[in-house]
Image (cartoon, rainbow, N blue to C red; front, side):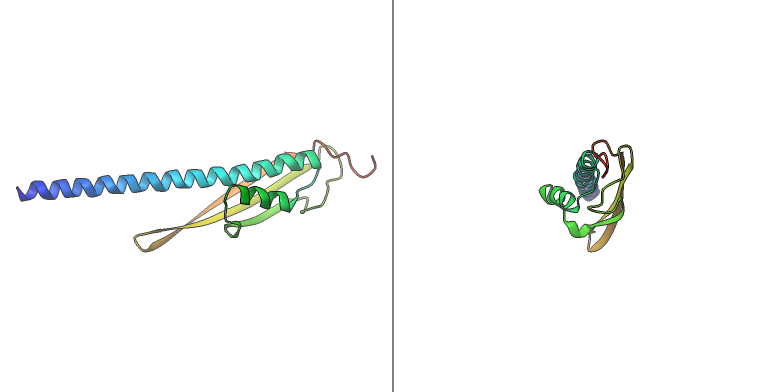
Length: 128
């Protein structure tokens, strides 16, 4: 009788841990997707305008409810607000997101790195 109670208790604990893992996985996937969308949309606008606009990136992050303090920009080519030389020039945006999850009073940090590359398609340069 008592062993059946312990077996049911351990099964319940195992099921709760499985549910917790699924919740963490879903939350992580949603955070990754939202942050990816912000970078992708910023790159698409840069491909049309020929430059990366920091305010556009910040607007997308805020629209998607992403804490900007968790984002660290690693590389922007060309630099923010600087136009490329002409059609076909490379554009690159690379940043990382660090977010922390607390499980059983222990903090786990996750670092996700996003790298977007594109080609200028809309800005012809200063001479046109």
